[in-house]
Image 1 (cartoon, rainbow, N blue to C red):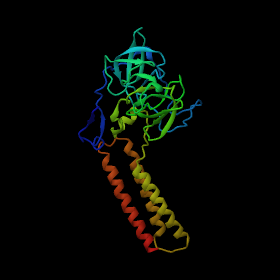
Image 2: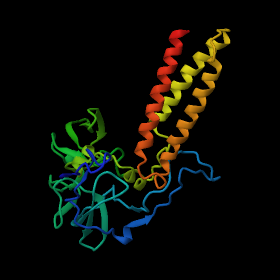
Image 3: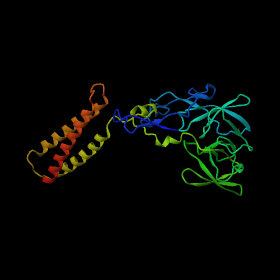
Image 4: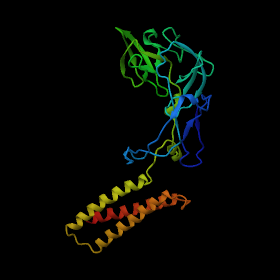
Length: 306
């Protein structure tokens, strides 16, 4: 899968990448396999916000994925789809009886491929069979922890585990993290590697991307939060020196002046959120940064004098 890059037309576009979606062959989900996905915007049953920065985003439907595949059957791949609920792509299958189901799509599976599930399945990407029938050294994904419960491990984009050994009814698997785990050989696993290999190389740097993902960013810029902390840390030290009866002409008036100037700067920084009022809003951020540097320099000079 290729990664799409953008020209740096704006600072947020620089170094931004997105998936090319070349593997996607079907763009509308199967209506019989989707359910409503309700959003709560970070609120509990009383309507109180208990998780901040949740809210908004695109309307999504949940795709019902068949993680068990415990029936011995042959199914044909109808299409590869995008799933907003997971990092990997999903494949729509249709068995001989006409029943459709979704599975996690592996690398190398496209439209028209025939997949098998059962103890006698071939060692081919997308086939599901018990681990006891899989040769040592094979890369697998969608691994069960309890026989018949369904796949619980190695389901993320680009993930795969390697079968290292089989002994005394247990199989030794090397996980994507490097951890070595033991699983019953009666558990099932799928052959291959999960699709969307380039997911880890995608860089989302635009605010619109986070809005689509139901993430509400903080309007107060990080620069002003840091400056706020530094200012009041120095302000506290100066006030402590003033309490020690150090007499400097005009010193209290200067502290009041610095405090009001900083409040004015914070108000300008907060006004950055109203972009429609200030088309060239970046000018204000540079202006605020300039004022903050001047105030901190004056504070350091006074501290040296004290």
